[in-house]
Length: 577
Image (cartoon, rainbow, N blue to C red; front, side):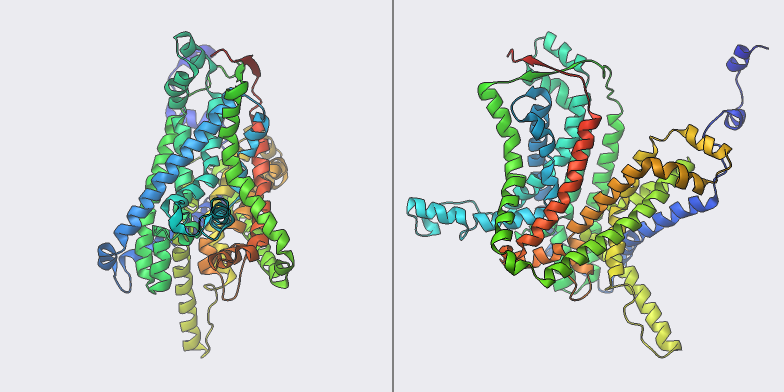
């Protein structure tokens, strides 16, 4: 019997599984699988706590919430998500299209600078523009002096502290999600499809609506889901603008009414929104596989614009960058310089240290756990481990307010149980061991940002060929030794990038920190929130500027990696339309 006949013969499935060469055939220690499931269980603990408290509260106020405030919370949240989704999509798609398809002055700067609003937290930009645009701000003061108006009755000016103002503030800092996703798709789209549409008589506008945008819908859906998740997570902006969303409702019911069960019930409603968004995002990623690059090596042609068309494209890209980054950073810089002596105090150093310490510990712990998840997923190619990794990523989708409720309940139950046993057996009170301590904040950070770390590390591990694992195994290395001696040196840049991103996200995080921090413990984020809420933005400008400057670092790294990975062959042709 020849080799060809053996290959053509139908072998049993068990024979193929046993004798087919594969890098997955190795003895995987059971502790890797158990470690992955243990991490997933830790992440799921806050979610389970919220659901338990929802169905078994000490005082059920669900009928009261349903009859009074919940409809208002729901309508405000839906309107906010709708407005932010539409405005962010319009900004992200338009900037992605013109920076990809056209060549005009400043395009090379815009393709990375349009990501800079990522570095500005939404609550910071809300405080800055309120300080500028409210009745006593310099904009309206200047208008009254210029036109001789004496009071607000003499003219009309949009009210910044409103639902529309919140939509604008959030859109200015969240559109980069859509810009990044959609622009990558525009670059990777088949140039032959656009050429074919042009030969059929379509102009560039028709090519955009009929070819480019439909094939970019999966990427748009993924970016939009991320935008809406961040919109649900926001607390500083909606609280400052008095927009009663579900997030603000959790704080109202918990802090003002003193009913954590009612807060958990509102949190469960938010979790329904999150599950819908996750399902929408997963479905969109499945559809994204239907679109292939096809002619990825075909020369990509940009159209060189001049005159009014070039100016229009420049304005489309410049306005979001100006409003979302340059104006707020310039205002913060001015306040920080003018009030530097008042801000540069011992308290500022303490708050900076608190933020740095918490973010560093959380980043280190998150990277270690993310490494276990990513490496366990690489070792065990089975459905149970993959499901555990997916479950461990649910924490990123949880808004900070929901996470705060879910974290405080199991920690408080643990503290109460230990205190009860200590009183009964030893006659002493142990007090708060976990809840109301730094452990609660760090735990919340880990749950929230674990998906960021594991996703980045997993993408780095995918670049390591399976043959290296097989070679290391043949030399007698264990799985832990392969990770330490082979994989870690190769994925070190990805690990450091993930740690930096988690560090910056922890520095900016406000909702969970505001609730879980110990008494008389402030970070830069809570300091900015407290002073800006008291109409004292100038006193917190230095802290806000530090948060923004720290956030710029991963944005620059992200933009550089995107540009480096999109080394497409580009030619420029003159405008013919």
